[in-house]
Each structure stands twice: as structure tokens, then as C-alpha cells.
Image 1: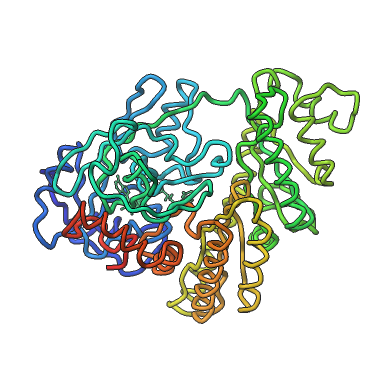
Image 2 (image 1 turned 120 degrees about the horizontal axis):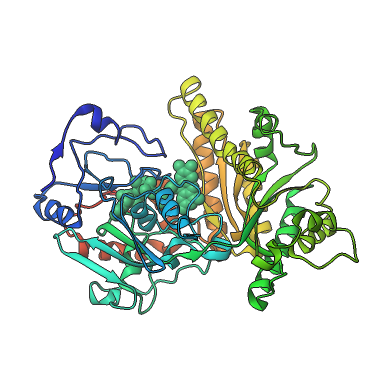
Length: 508
Ligand SMILES: Cc1cc2nc3c(=O)[nH]c(=O)nc-3n(C[C@H](O)[C@H](O)[C@H](O)COP(=O)(O)OP(=O)(O)OC[C@H]3O[C@@H](n4cnc5c(N)ncnc54)[C@H](O)[C@@H]3O)c2cc1C
């Protein structure tokens, strides 16, 4: 059995996750080194003990904040082994370490979240998704197997295709929304695989000790484009055409087609935040004064396209006699949308510029979090981060944004929006001026959730539910109280004493 560590300085490290919920505390942390040690620990937990598994604690939902739970940290579950084209990672291995190991053999794991310090176990437990979900799906589609330890100490070594979930527990019939990302309680589907039950279960059904990932060959080359557009509607029209062009490329396997992996976006208020913080000047990025939206586009090139003179491809965008190439087609498409002149493209190998674009994007959530923390210190300690994570079928994205802006405007709220526009996924965030704003913001988020559900979307796209009461309410609005009770039955069957991640997904 691994030791229970109680050094206060050590425990202080585990008191909160990236949602920064106040009041987190734990009596001890345990850091097992093998799945067997996890099993011994769980089998040994007496009545009344509660256990919260944590990875990197980058959760944005409070799901990795202990409230009196014993913390089971996966940081010493660090095995990493290539298995042909697949890779088996201990739960505590960071996604950055997975990518580094794969890069050494010319491969990668495409659907990772933006934060690469997250762990393999955490990504599986939250069914994380990222910018490249548009082309590659979520981590769920890239997990071939997991080793999971149940609360009674049973160790299940699962590979896809071996065992149905119904062989372990009764699976209710609930209809999940048909959207590319959905991390809202348990995955439920007819005849579902047992592996899928644990992916996205946020530590409530078992401890994931190892993950077996499928991997992909790295694309021959990647370009990153920063494309401002006049307003949100113009940006959405451009994204619609880029999505269609990419889907046609995948269907026809045209080596000269436009192949897009991801499109991220920042709205006009995000651009203001960037300007207020001087990030554009620091990174020497010129954003036109009238820009209403900025798109960050990841373009993959085939080996054939990458072998050609890429500067010439860019320079020939408006030359009708120039050779047909993916970059030329891409630039011509931007030109048709009057977005070429303000666009900047980082060609393959220009890592400095590509990471400057990524830094610009990351500066927005960082700037918002800083402002919320400041308001909490200077205005009212009751002020907290107030944010949503919603997705609709892309065709309804403009409609959702219209509803979102109206709900925040009629409550006189300062709204910043960014997200993964190629998936129809947004993160509306509030810049609160008072604690009353937070309450009004939560109200707006619930109303937006209703609208998103009515548009066949999901109000919980990629961050999970965690301990956040608004997200737990959104789960109830999505499936109804009966649907949530049906999910609770799964929890009761596998963890009757409520030992694991108590209060996560379902209120205590
Ligand atoms: C800057 C930033 C950017 C982010 N970008 C994205 C993004 O693009 N997409 C996205 O999906 N998320 C994103 N997130 C959220 C977060 O990174 C993901 O949810 C991530 O998958 C969590 O991994 P973790 O190792 O930090 O898990 P933790 O935060 O430690 O845990 C998350 C949940 O999973 C459970 N858990 C953790 N490990 C295990 C395990 N081994 N077995 C069972 N349960 C476990 C915990 O109990 C908890 O409920 C972002 C967060 C930050 C801070």
C-alpha cells in the first residue's frame, strides 16, 4: 500500500484546480506507482473515506478540487511504451510527454486539449477535445484501451471490442446530442463498449491507471494563418466555406485540396482585451482597427504540396495562370471573402511566427482570468469566473451567437467570446463588474444552455461537469431529472458507498 502523505506544504499543492474554487482541502495525498497499488488503496478504503483522483488539476470545473477527500495523485503512474503504432501511457504522463515520445518516431496524438500539461488519465477521464477536433475527433476516438481500477480493487484491462458496458452495469437509453464534442455525464449509446463508459466519467466510476492511445503519422507540413474578418457574420461565412472545402478534400483525397485541421476564433471584445494588454504590440501582430473577429487556421499540406515552392504558392494567390496548389486555393478562398489582404500566414518551419499566433490566442483566456481575479480582490470576494462551454451543429452557430449576445446584452454584461469555431464550440466568458453580474451571468448561461439544447447542441462540450453547480444544472436541463437519475444508477451500481469523486457530476 502506498503511504498516506500529510506534510502540509505538500498538501497545499493539491488544494485547488484551474477553476480556482475556494476552500479546497485534503487530509492526505497518496501517490501510487502501479495499478496494483491503486487497487490496494481502493480495496483498503474504509467506510466513510472518499477518494478524489487528480492528474494535472487543469480542470476548469472544480472536478479536481478536493473537499475533504483523500487525494489520489497519478503523478507517479508514469510508464510510457510504444506498442507498434500505438502508445501506452501511465495515467500521470503529460500529453506533452506523449507528444514528445511520438515526435521521435514521426507520429502524434492529434486530438489533445490546448493545455499539454494535462495528463493522459485526466484527458481520458474528461473526454478532452481540442482545436483539431474538426478533423480528428476527441480523445475518445483515439483511445483503444484503458486499465481501470474499480472501487472494490478489481483491475480491468480493457481493449475496445472485447467487452460491452452492459456486461458490467445496466445502461439506460438516453439520446446524446449529435455534435462533435460532448462531455456531459456518462457516455450512453446502444451496445456501447465498456471502454466508452469510463472515458468522460470524471473519476466517478473508477481510477484510470493506464491509457492505450492510437496515434497518427505527422502531417508532411503545417501552416498557421491568422485571418481577421470584418465582423462575426463574415467570419462565420468564411469558416463555413473552409469547412466545406476541407470536407471535400478528405472525401476526394485530393492532394492539392485545402486540408484544415482546426479553426479557432477570437471575437471583437477578445481583440480589445489583447490590445488593452499590449499583446499585439509585444508579438508584433497587426490587427486591423475594424476587425470584428480573428480566425486562427491550421492548414495541413500533403508531401506533394509541401515539396513545392511555398512562397510562390502564396505570391500567386491572385494569378489565374499560376499552378494549382493547396495554399493558392486557400488564399483565393480568403480573397473571395475579402480577407486575404489582412491575413498573415506562417509557413512550415516558421515556428516563431506560428507560436506567436498561438500566444495571441492564449493571451485572451489569460487576460480574462487576470481581470476576474483582480475584480475578486478589488471589488468583491464573491466574484468568480463565470464561463460556458457550449456547442451546436455548425449550421446553427450564427443563430447561437445571436442568442448569446442578446442574453448578455439585455443583462448589461461585459462578454468575451473565443473558441473552436470549426466545431461550433464557444467559450462565452463574463468580465464581471460586481457580484450581481456573476449571478446575472449564470442566469444568462442557463438560458443560453436552453437555447443550445433546443438547437440540438450540447451545453457541456469539452470541459466536463465537475463540481460546478451551473454545469450540473445544465446536465439536468439536457437530460431531465429522470435522465440524470438514470446516470446516478450507474454510479450507485459501481460505487455504492460514493467513495470516488463524490460531488463531481452529481451534487452530493
Ligand atoms: C489553459 C487551459 C486550456 C485548456 N484547454 C482545454 C481544451 O482545449 N480542451 C479541453 O477539453 N479541456 C481543456 N482544458 C481543461 C483541462 O485541461 C482538461 O479537462 C484535461 O483533460 C484535464 O486533465 P488533468 O490531468 O489536468 O485532469 P484533472 O484536472 O486533474 O482532473 C479532471 C477530472 O478527471 C478526473 N481524473 C483525473 N485523472 C484521472 C484518472 N487517472 N482516473 C480517473 N479520473 C481522473 C478528476 O477526478 C477530475 O474529475 C484546459 C485547461 C486549461 C487550464
